[in-house]
Length: 215
Image (cartoon, rainbow, N blue to C red; front, side, top):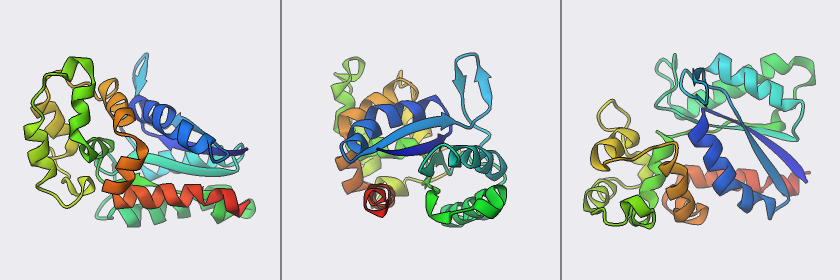
């Protein structure tokens, strides 16, 4: 069994890895586990304040007790990213992990991934699944369909204080709790539907799946 350590932002991403990733990758012989990087917000939660130094530090620690290391954090909440786009940020992150590992560095073990723009964009892969959650069973998903249909892919839903996926959900879905409802809706949507709708996310999954043949 291949151990894949994933550095994540906080509770939402941990639940996503546990509820969506685990079953899929266990069937391939890959055991995934998530470790949070974000600052402590309360006794029971972490999140935010993700930066290259913090993330590369956590990934370098995972490097020593995993066959492979990845990350799953939002581009939207990344601090001190300057003008780097998501691809440039991933390259810089891998470079910084290598600096921390130094002479025993094996770049093949490190697979940085930063979600463009947020985890919540994945929920737009199939907005009808909001109705599969009891408290949203009678919710009219038309506004969410309208958002989804305004973009080529869910990953293109833009990055700003007003229009980021999480901001749209908070505004359009009364009572939406990203930590509780987000992972549950993601589970109802399923990883295959997300892959079909989100090409960048799918590319990451394909890279991780290929780890089986690389060992």
